Length: 85
Image (tube, rainbow, N blue to C red; front, side, top):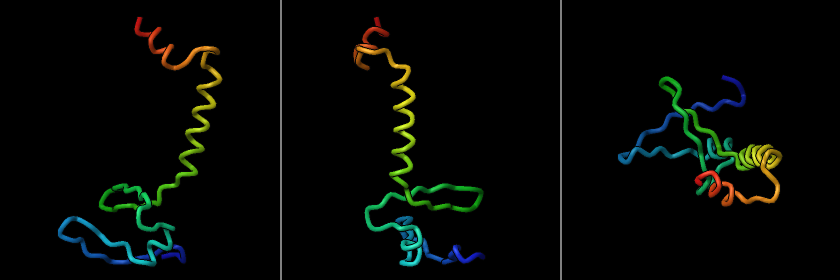
């Protein structure tokens, strides 16, 4: 185990909940109300703090790509209406 790894055993509660210990919350940088992504890999569950900044950058790049190809002077609503006609 490297310095950045934590290994903690937790008990699953009756509602399927696991409490993240303080050390884990601190390592992930999460607090009550934070979003945490869950990924199942084989018999492991990987928890990852949801990174709003990274997700917004992805959306901004996508919006930039779309705007370059979008016809000038037409709204998305107009484009959908024309496509349906």
